[in-house]
Image (cartoon, rainbow, N blue to C red; front, side, top):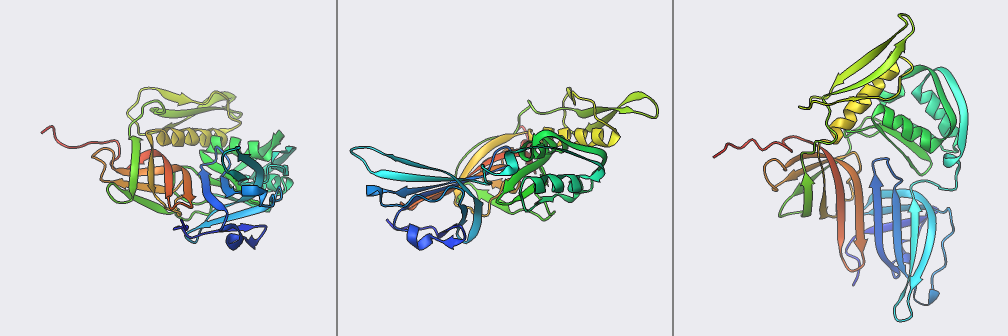
Amino acid sequence: MPWTVDWAVFIDGRNMTSAMRPYLLQISVTDKDGTASDSCSLSLDDTGGQLKLPGEGASVKVFLQGVAVFDGTIDSVRSSGSRGGGRELAVTAKGFDTKGKAKQLQSHHMDEASLSDFLGKAAEKAGLAGITIAPAFAAITRSYWSADAESFLHLGQKLARELGGTFKIRGDQAVLAERGEGASPAGGALPTIAGTIGKNVISWDISPVTGRAKFKKAKARYFDRKSATFRQIEVDTDFDAEAEDEARTVAADEGQASDIAKGKQAASKRGGGEGSVELDLEPEAQAEGTFVLGGARPGVDGVYRITGVTHRCDRSGGSTTSLELKQPQGGAGSDNRGSG
């Protein structure tokens, strides 16, 4: 059966679509919110060992319906088969070069510098072309930044957790975006995906209310040198909860304490609900984008933050997009109907 989805694959800048078309069986692309690397898997018919193994470390770009859904590097190639069955070749790519300097330990520091300057230096040492940082984070200035025997991957993820952001590497570029704002690192709005039961929604499994991550306040302590006392920053989460979330470590100063408290506030809001939905193919869906659900039921319909995206397409004609969801808004979690 011929492909019903318009796809294109580029290897090391060369358009390999026509050459791969007789052999490509399935495409799977996963976009995460920074907790794991983006990944891509290409499954090919390798009957008789007819395919040449692609080179390790080759760059890969994948397009679905004309939309770029993956940019990364080949990480592994796996052959599988059986005596009575066929043979397949699975080519797996990651969002960054896993053999590169991104995983190499760094030790350096900067005084009286912005986060943009510090992470820019760390990205250069990691062999990347650069890093794009959300404006709200880029201008943060501290008296001392340091990488203490940490890889660029660890450093970026650590700061993302502290600030309430999303960090990832795509190709030779790193990004640090605000988490939960539905915006790209440059500040532009990410695509909004609409899902309607009975139309493009195949299935859903959503809990719009979860209590585990909810806290009344987020707190962080710091030592005030002028008064020689410990002080505390508090941020309300707007949740109806009793517990308060307090950072275990003491911040270096008031600015860092404020950043940590705001990061914990963002994490609490993000964990207010969770779920998943499977749709007809939506190639524009991205992690940190917005999903609007309609037609399920009051209290479930509403707005959610996308935390993970998986596109699956195969030669038999199937093509779907699965979304992982958190941070319910816009009516999700509240059934305001009368009692009858």
